[in-house]
Image (cartoon, rainbow, N blue to C red; front, side):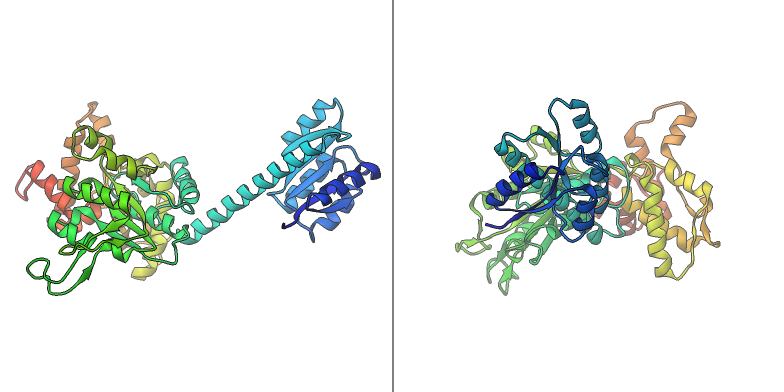
Length: 452
C-alpha cells in the first residue's frame, strides 16, 4: 500500500511520538517537527498534502503556522489540535482556513484517522479541480469560454467535472453561444481524448441523407452507393460523437438513435451485420426539448437518455462585462490576421457594444469586431465602425413601449440581410444560425429585398 504523507507539528514530545507511531503503523509517512519554525524550514522539501498542527506552541503559534503553510501550499489541509474546551481557539483556526480540529490530548486515534483521510480526499479534490481549470485554460485560451460572469464560470466548472466521466451530456443554449466549443472541451478532458471527436449537424441533412451519414452504407444499398462508406458512428468508435442541433432530428431517426444507445450496435444501410461500438455521445440544441416532448415532436425516452448531465450556455446579453473581455480578445485575434495595430475600443464604441442585445451571441460579436477592424480608419474601434449595431432594447425603452420579440427578431434579420446584400450564407454565419434556420425565418416573416 502506498504511503500517505502528513506533517505533524507539536512541541510536546510525548504527544508527538504517540501520534507519529500510530500513523506510521497506519501506512503514513510522518514528518514530525517540534516547532512552527522547524516545520516551515523542512516543509519546502516535504510538501505533505495534510498537516496536524498544535495551536499553542512557543514562538510561532498554530494560527501563524497555518498561514505560512498556506503560503507555501495553498491546497494543504490542516487539522489543528487545541486544548480541551477551547472552542474560541478552534473557531479562530477554522476561520483562518483549518480543515478541522481535535482536542488535546488526542484520545480517539481512530477519529484522527478518519479526519486525516477526509482532509487528504479534500486536498485531492481541490488539486484535481485546479488541474482541470489549467487544462481548460490551455484548451480555450482565446475563445468565447473566457469571461468572469457567473454563468460562464459555472459552464467551465461543469466541463471540468463531467469531462473525465464517460456520461452522456446535453448542451443547451441559443445559437452562437459556443456549444460545439463545449463539446470539444468535454472530449479534450476525457480519457477518450486521444481518439476522434466526430461532429455532425443534424439540421444540415435531410432525413434520408442523415441516416446514411450516421450509419454508413454498403455498396449497392441505394442508387449511387458504389462503395462501402463508414458512418459517423463508426468513425467515432473509441472516441466521442457530437450531434449538434439534435432537436432537428426527425422522429424516425430519433428511434434509431435510441436503439443505438440501448444496444451499442449499428447496422450500415443495406446490411444486416451488427457492428458493436464504444462511443461517448454529446448532443446540443438551441430548442426547448421539454416543450418538444410535450408536443410529441421529440421522444421522451430519448430525451431522458440524452439529458444525463445538462450544460446550459448563457446568452451573451446575460454575461455582462464578458462582452468587452471577448471584444478585446477578438481585436487581438483579427488585428494580427488583417495586419492592423488596433489598440482597443473607444468609450462610445464600448457603450454601443454593451447596450446591444446580441441575438447572434458570441458568434455575432466576433463577426462584428472583425468587420469593424476592416472598416476603422484609426487605431481604435469607434461607434461609427460598428455598422448597423443598435440596441433593440434601447429602441423599445425610448418609445416607452414593449415590442414583441418576433417583431424585434424580424427587424434584426432584415437589417443583417440588407447589410450583406441578401447573402443567406454570410447572414446566417453572422446571426449564428444554420442557413436552413435563416431560410425558415425569412419565409415565416415574409421577408424579401423589397419588403418594408
